[in-house]
Length: 382
Image 1: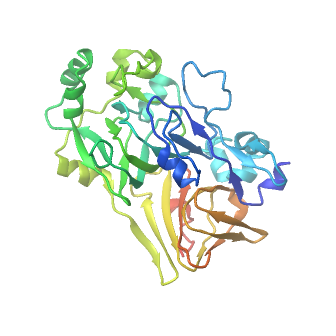
Image 2: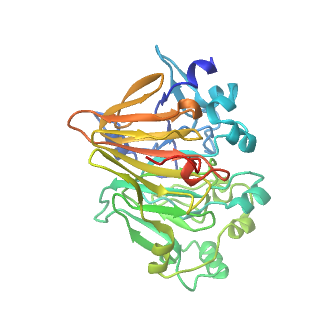
């Protein structure tokens, strides 16, 4: 069956995931649902081969995993399909290093409530403490948001000067939530903002944020709040992920910066690599920021020819409608679609439907042996 699918662009079904915080109404609207509402499924996991870590929900064996929509009806786990022929779907350059693991996870997030203050493991901590080859360094591309209780969308990010391990641990022991929040910079966010969140950096997505997240493929989130802002108790496993409380504080990087320094270090400016009257493409997260993943944005007003990449890719249709075409086929796409593009697809042509602008965010896996953002050095970027 694998051969039938690795030669075409695959459409993925929505995969909503339970979390400890509330949200999802903006995600429902974005998907075009007639009765959007907030609830306990505020995230949509895209091209995921990773299970969500949700204590008490272990019986939901496929929570977090993505399904391919099969022609003629039905669906199949993307993970199972890839495992039939990893080289064909992911490419031998990738599989020689990562096997059948994609090495990347993409999410849509819509927060009605503030997420708990948290930190993700870097590579060293993940390997030495959690026995994982992947940490959870990530990036956010802000799509928009909403005011909640009179506050504009915002994030909490990075330690302020003067916050040491001893100060941070004392705040945790006393569960001084206002003190912990005040230890981090509160930064308003706007549509188009891009942030890079390295493993070890403390943070929390605030209420009202709607964003795309690209990250290493784990669900390792260590938290410092024992209850959510709504009063829900956080299970002990989700506090330290089984590593123990001492290791929880080992996970943080205790570098501290002013707000201006924090923004300069972690907020990234999109870099335009192609522009014409018909279309443009910008690097949101490139190899100059990290080799763990990549993220580009393509705006199509008429048409755009994307050069063949030497790796697979994951695409989110952010807005508009149109078509993606490759050598052996084509697919109609619209806002809310998720696509998996196997390595062998080659060059693709995006065409916007009449009267609409098509916007696509394309995410790529780790590329330590490749050139800029998944392209071989000799390849054109436009």
